[in-house]
Length: 279
Image (cartoon, rainbow, N blue to C red; front, side, top):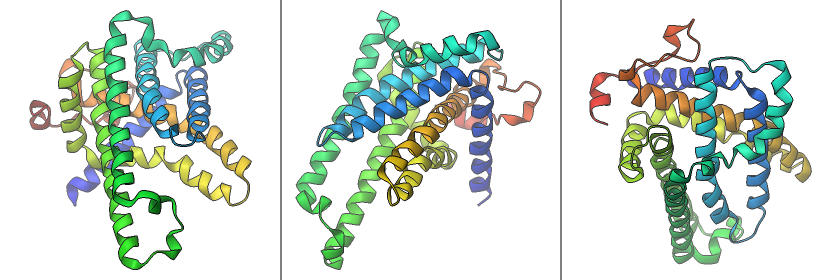
């Protein structure tokens, strides 16, 4: 129980640091978040292949966001007023910033292929096991079938979490530290397993717009999309910034990395040496 509360505090501090980093340049990051929310919402509306397209573009957008966050962190300054509008105009293009360096194209394509393949296999698993029952009216199903569908839904959730866990740190390790992608996937999984509770806290913040959108959909479909765009434009970059801060905590603690807010040294929790040596 003590470890549970400790990791909740770590997750909370990562969120605070992510918010502080976001506020250095909310115009660029907020514009990137809004653009990403529009793209993801539009792809989600495409029947059959919408999920595959999201799996294809998600590593690209997350990698580009990491690159932008790294630049903002290293600038160590709040964006001047005269640069706010240019940053906002530039934000959609920043989601493709990862392709500006030719050396990053192949690792990005590999990460996208891994993501799409995993999602495709998950979809095939669902089709093979339950077929059209997955999209049927669950209220008409018997208890045994319903239990089986719920168990499969839990398995699908776990598989998606494992996919995310393999990428959230592999991408910054690859594109910010020039480490090979495949070994980075393993390191990302190990780090995510060690800090599962803290990362689930960040995941909870990330899926908040989806739950609010479902609630709003009962009133108005357009209201649910508007709510997703508004909240997503903040939660997407803030959670990405929090993941960036967690990446620094876990993988750069020995490099004497400083927290986002240098006046609050206790705002960043450095992992114990045992966990670092195991990575």
